[in-house]
Length: 84
Image (cartoon, rainbow, N blue to C red; front, side):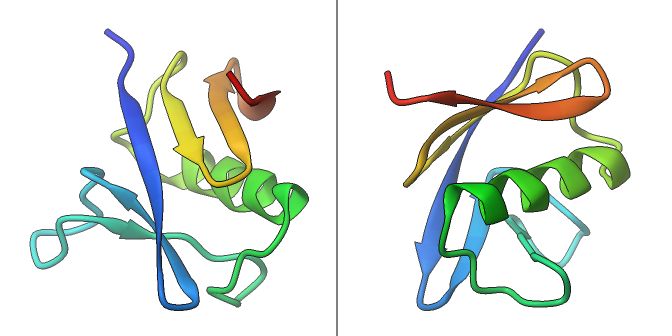
């Protein structure tokens, strides 16, 4: 079953709420090429796609609600779906 996650900005960093990276952190921080500041839809797409490739908890069909709109895991990558 697909899940929906909210991406929340905290200071200059973005976090996927409810997606646990390890036992010490209940939310997963996003990174764009070693930086934690994500300031455009393209950067968000890259960061979410990178996360999808490495996080065992994400599945095809999972969605992300972000400040830039909705993104979703489709096949092997993350796609941008825009605003709903």
